[in-house]
Image (tube, rainbow, N blue to C red; front, top):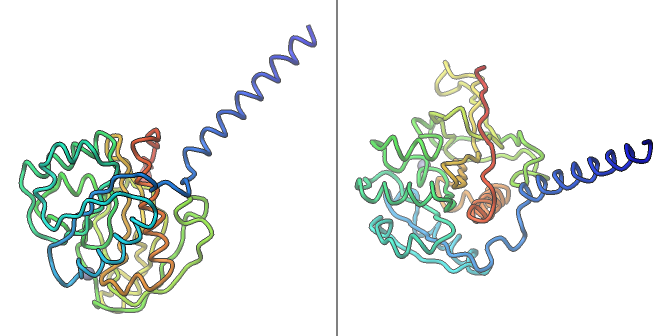
Length: 264
Ligand SMILES: [Zn+2]
């Protein structure tokens, strides 16, 4: 009887261990997560965000990681069903502008199906102001950057997540994005508003970097990157690269449960 109990205890211990390894593996981003991946890179919109210069930072890097990159400077590519059926990840850096109903539907259906999506600043966080469906997918919408170009600190709030693990707080001189935020995002980094420019938001804590799910698709966003030279800040670039790698694994990993009911 005693040995029978020992066997059961050992079996349960092994199963817990396996479950733990599985959970850890799901969190870990593979070093070569972009190797062989097909990436749709879409850029354009408001020129002030330097879509061409940013393309020239990220596309060569994606290729150096072994990704195959399909590059478009317009949104009609979202309606190319053969292309959309073939990709693992969409990177969109397209500020403002308008997306048609069919383009928007095709884009969101791809992500719902499991294609990853990654973007930064206004290229994803201020893309189509009159499209709430797109904003629902991203998890935030830019509304203000008080003081325009100012000095501020980015605080790493999640030190366990692979996207921000090992990184320290760092300073930016750029637009500090004040965003309308979906409460059900997994926040990895934040910034605090000083109140110098808009006194009534003194002490406001605002998400800067987050992950979320949209259907089966992984969505990654960072509000850093007003201009291409913002990525001269090593942490800003590293966060974006890691977020892209995480989103690129979307189709091959189980969706994560990232809902965080913070108002309960
Ligand atoms: Zn900007």
